[in-house]
Length: 118
Image (tube, rainbow, N blue to C red; front, side, top):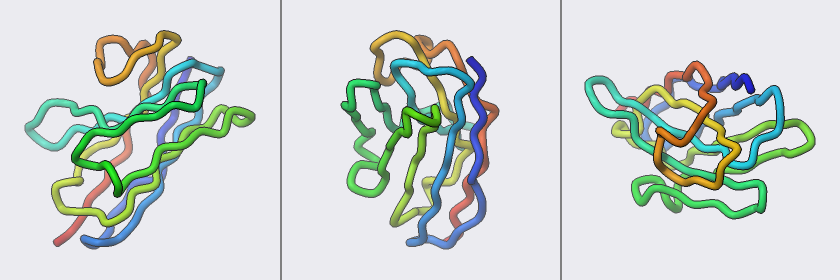
């Protein structure tokens, strides 16, 4: 399965951005991760084909993850962005039921940069 993430950019604090991830085939679990300069890759949100979803506490109530199953697409709507949200955002997918463990995701997109200015 190949993943392609796109939609990043530069936005002022308090603004919004929407990321998209295109998958070449269906998968059960899809997720967003992010990696800030000099830091480990952090889990952001996960959505399962069952419709369930979950978020990291740091983005809960600000970010919304969704999927379009017909198009094999995943989205991340990011509102009320903060400078600390600045990172490269990666989409990931797995045929397993998994949540936040990056090691359990078999497929990764190339990443898209999100920069939030203060």
